[in-house]
Length: 102
Image (tube, rainbow, N blue to C red):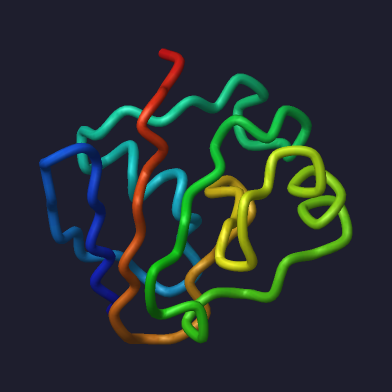
């Protein structure tokens, strides 16, 4: 089991997650808003999150994610929540973008 701590604006929540789950599902289950226009297919890039810690507990980005992030990425810790999947137990901390589309 992993714990994903999500921060959005001034709110924070810790959510238990299982190995194999994608961050998009974890975030949506938490009740925080996160845009995801393409329904998790790595086509739009709207579900970008910033991983503050615990990157080692996520799968490495695949080519499609790297390509999508090249147009929206601010830093090396940005990931698409629809592609970032938990691969080991541990704590992951992430920030959601300030502006969201619902």
